[in-house]
Image (cartoon, rainbow, N blue to C red):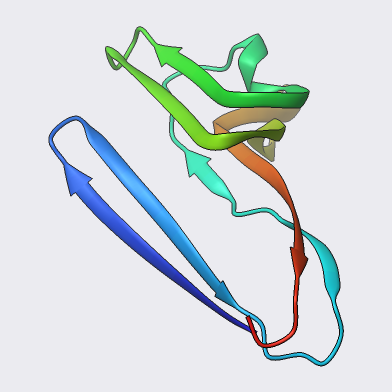
Length: 114
């Protein structure tokens, strides 16, 4: 299996295209789930959710003054969760928000030599 990733940057947008070539001998069902790690200035409810089927996942950041939208051509599941670190301080253990991880979960059926 070969996976190619092409990133195109234009003013105000970023496009990521994936190409998957499968050289196996049998059909293969899988979930393709590329990981997007995003640095927002604060945590919101959108950072911790499971969406069963949607065309996009969107998050705004008023602190940085922008909106981020991850969208595809077909509805898929999206998992979003906070990226946090744990440290020990005088007050005990503290969780610190570092960013948000978003996983679009794309079901695929790969056919041999395609």
